[in-house]
Amino acid sequence: MKIRFQADANLDPDIGRGLQRRAPTLDYRPASGLIPDSMQDLDVLKLAAADGRLLVTADLRTMVGHFASFIESMDSPGLLLVPAWTPVGAVIEGVIMCWLSWDAEEMRNQVRWLPR
Image 1 (cartoon, rainbow, N blue to C red):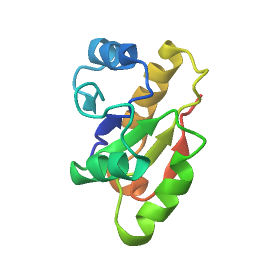
Image 2 (cartoon, one colour; image 1 turned 60 degrees about the vertical axis):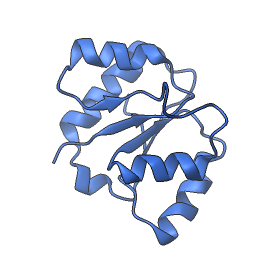
Image 3 (tube, rainbow, N blue to C red; image 1 turned 90 degrees about the horizontal axis):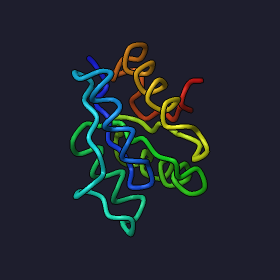
């Protein structure tokens, strides 16, 4: 089963637009209108999990710890960490690589870094 992605509010919206152009069948939901900047990490994780979506985030400081707490009591489709300094084009290519290479089940409750 293919991974479905949920963008965190801290990701550049150009990533979603680029993914739509490069891989129109890839299921990547932007944060716009869904995840405000002020939403707590656990609520973002719950939202992504409720829709069966792997969360893509640039929040390297707090999200990993919150993810570890979250999976103690709930299942998650996973967490993909994207360093904030990564160029948009590299993020697009990395997400496509994840989508083509990883199965949704193998990502369950896993944290991975964006491939380079």
